[in-house]
Amino acid sequence: MKKGFLTVLLSVIAGGLTAYGVVKATLPQPLQTTVVTDESGKAVEYRTVNLAESDYPDFTYAAESAVEAVVYVEVTVQSRQQYQTIDPFFRFFFGDEYGFGQPQSREQKGSGSGVIIRPDGYIVTNNHVVANATQIQVTLNNNQQYDATVVGTDPATDVAIIKVDATDLPAIPLGDSDQLRLGEWVLAIGSPLGAQLRSTITAGIVSAKGRSMPDNSGEFKIESFIQTDAAVNPGNSGGALVNKKGELVGINTAIVSQTGSYTGYSFAVPVNIVKRVAADLMDYGSVKRAVLGITMGSVDKKIADEMKLSSVSGVFINEVLKGSAADKAGLKKDDVIIAIDGQKITDASSVQAKVSSYHPGDKAVITFIREGKQQEVTVEFQAAAQPNGQEGQDGSIAFYGANLKAADPETLKAMGLRSGVEIVSLGSGKMLEAGAKVGGIILYVNDEPVSKPEDVVAKAKKASRGVYIEGVDKAGRSFYFGFGK
Figure 1 (tube, one colour):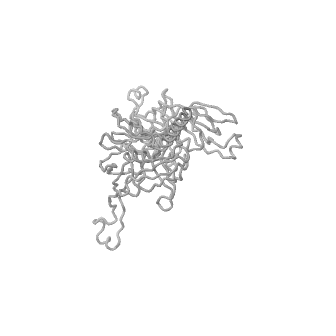
Figure 2: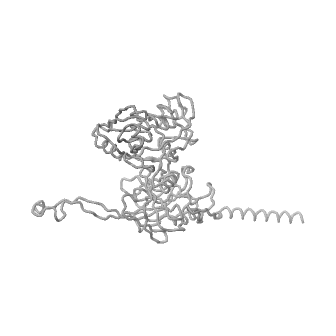
Figure 3: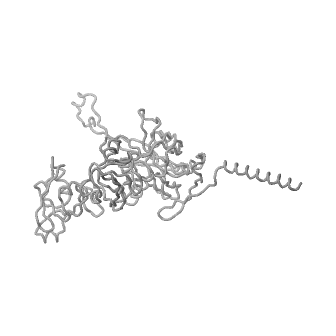
């Protein structure tokens, strides 16, 4: 009898524990808090939920937390339009004194979204949202409004940082976009179609990674987009792409559509690119971009067969720029890059995305295949060439990959010169390729004397076809070289 009672008791206990386990597994997991700190070290808690990747997605915690960090951005732009006279006879009698035919200034409004990434008022958005804005106003999810200023922009990645004068804002924690998996659930949060639909949340999956889109502008772009099917429309630009843990994994940027409205394809800048760009913009006001110094193409089956590759993966090098980081590391034409610091390379977009995560001076191990053999080399990244005429932090002026300064008076005196422009540094560009040397003094550009860097830039800009430079090196020997524009 006692034995039977114990059996029944153990069965009841086992059944109870089983039921408890089932109920426990179906309830939301315990909340966690992630601490986000600003530059002064002040901490603000951000609520997330502990979900395993295999759990059925529960977006409530991620949505309720992340929406507080997404803002509505309204911009004002002053545009100038050319108006034509309707009646030419009226213009004949009265001329242009009434403004006919003259450019007219008009105020235009635009809007987008932004994401608070630091409690002390730093907000990330798209460059195209705030480009040329004369006034920016930010509205938080709790309806508080602030005037914002532009900290810095980066057209190459379409990322911008703006700032409001506020503290203790609900900043969102930054995730790791490299860990996103195809088919993973994500949320898109923003203000589609304007203020009336502020703080709209939509859900979708990661449809693809490393996407690029056609761009005929001719401008340098870094594109390695996350593609999702979360519904995004004009006004979502600059808004948040969030994983189910409530972490920022991307900034919604563009849609592909023949109608101008969402048709199933939306694209976001990966947060790992955003982190790097945002840090530079907040610290320096511009991006310190690293470059490898190659032109490249994707590997297809034909190339893989010709080069005896084991798989159709990686990028092959079309050209190595003279004096570039790749050149100094020993990379050559027809080498096939398959990994950078252990991260697999699949196409040109993945190379751009990976290289953009480094600063000039950083080093990385590049794995490549040459003549069928896998090899490794360490490369030290160089800085991207600055636009001609741009002033650097040291006061030097950029000129075709070189940096120029007015020559020191003592140096000129010792060399018996009255004036000249010194080449203080050289990077990849036409100056290096033409044979310029650090320490050389430029005396003439296209047969006209120069005494300051601005003279060099101006005379080169005025040239219709080529630039011819004369000067003396540190030893006092004359040099001559030229290059096409």
